[in-house]
Each structure stands twice: as C-alpha cells, then as structure tokens.
Image (cartoon, rainbow, N blue to C red; front, top):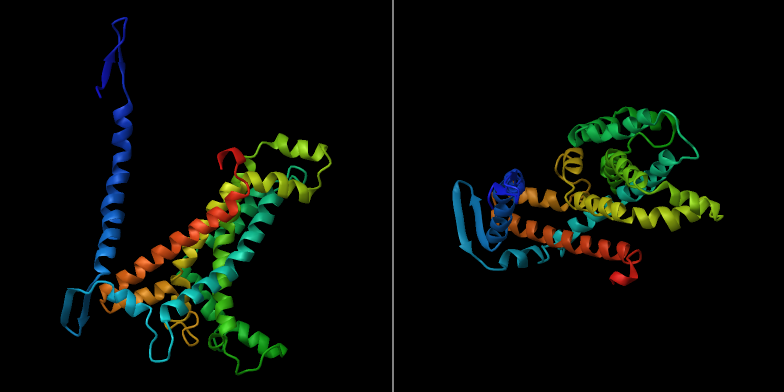
Length: 317
C-alpha cells in the first residue's frame, strides 16, 4: 500500500494503514519468538526421552506416547500421581476462588452504588489492592513465620487453649490447604474487585434507575440487570483466575519448602512439573505441560459455555 495517495483535486493525503502494522509488529515478533516457538518445542519434546543420569545425557530418543503413558500409570503404591496433584490443585484453587469472587462482587457493588455514595473510595480501593502488589514468595514466608512451631499464631492459640502445644499447622492437610487458599484469596480479591467495578461502572446508570422505578428491589436489580450485563467481564475474571489456579506454584512451593507437605497433599501440577525440570527430564516435563494446557483449554471452554449461554442473545444462538 502506498504511503500517500493523490486526491481528485491534486492534493496528497497520507495513508496511515502501514504504520498500524509497523506498530503492532513487535508484539507479534515477541509472541512468535518467546511464546509460540517454545509451545511447539514443548509439544515436540514431549514425544522424546531426554534426561540426565548423573553427568551422562540420555537422549533425545523418540518414544512416542510413552511419556504420557508413564504419567497415567499407577506407581508402586497404586497412585496415579498426576491425577492426585491435579486434584490437590483444584481443591486449593476452589477453596480460595469461591470467597474471592463472592467478596469481590459484594465490594464492587458496594463501591459503585450511587445510593450509598461511599466516601474515600480511593483509599479503600488502594488498601484492598495492596496485597496484590506483594510478591507471592514474600507472602508465603510471612505465613510460614506466623504459623510455624513457636510462631506467634501457634503461641497465642496455645495460650488461649484453642490448640495444644504439639499441634503443627504444616502436618495437617486442612490447615496447609487452608493457608494456601487464604493467601491466594488475599492476593487476588482486590484485583478482581477493581476489574468488576470497572465493568459495573460501564453499565448505563439509566438501566438501574429504570429498574428501581419499576419496583425492582436490590436483589432483583443485581440478578436481572447487573449480572447479565457484567457477565462478559465476570467470565473473563473467572477464566483468568482458573488459569492462574491451575498454574499455582510459588505459594505452596515456598510455604511447604517444595515437598508438598503433608504427604504431598499440597503439591500442585506445576510443582510436579518443576521436579522434572530440576532433574533435566525435559521429555516428561513437556508431557506434563501439554496435559496442563489441555486441562486449561477444556475447563476454560466449559466455564465459558456454562456462564455465557444463559445470557446469550437468542437470535445469535
């Protein structure tokens, strides 16, 4: 396309079309080099046996689907570990995501209400968003220090008689998973609140006023006006939160020192993947990565269909 073109009256006008392509080209170049190519290489390596045995490099040897078969083969204890770690991941994510979205929705409605007209919203928004700025590793170290044996939480609960002196938070499945879920909730509910607030503020205020004049109460306005119009933003938040939950790594890794205590009940899929990367077993690591990608795609599609179908325009079905 020519940069300039001649009008009928003899003047020349500048065509900016090519500059748009030039400005977006760096994104596609970076995406191609640092995302797309590694994705294909990961899929490619998942069909090969390649690892280190001491100082000796084994492979790459083509093994087809053997890495995938190995992942779904029960070990000596009769446990399919990838399914166990997938279950751990989903349980801890759901435990943190449910209160995250409930609290975020309530806060978003609370702060965007024209009836309440909350003062000092900037301060409150900053406060609820601040945990999101803290590194997950630092957050985990804080919780580890608070709940470890001899830590302030255990000492206080022991003094009040709520627990005995021998209780260990990190040897109990419920407390470890609860701490991980609580940290994920605290780190992300502020971000979700801000996004949902932006979605609600984008809804035409006259719709709320019309619903109120027609006699709708607050609950009816929420389910009949707010949620249908907020659903695209809500689905986006839920799917991105789910992707982050499936990729959960840093919080349980630091909190349990990488061992997934107790009895690997807090070990996640990405912690399992990281173990193979540490051992330079790129074939098995690639196979786990592909499985995580497939799980993410399937769950994302299911969530999108379930939540968006009921609010879709019948003429577009």
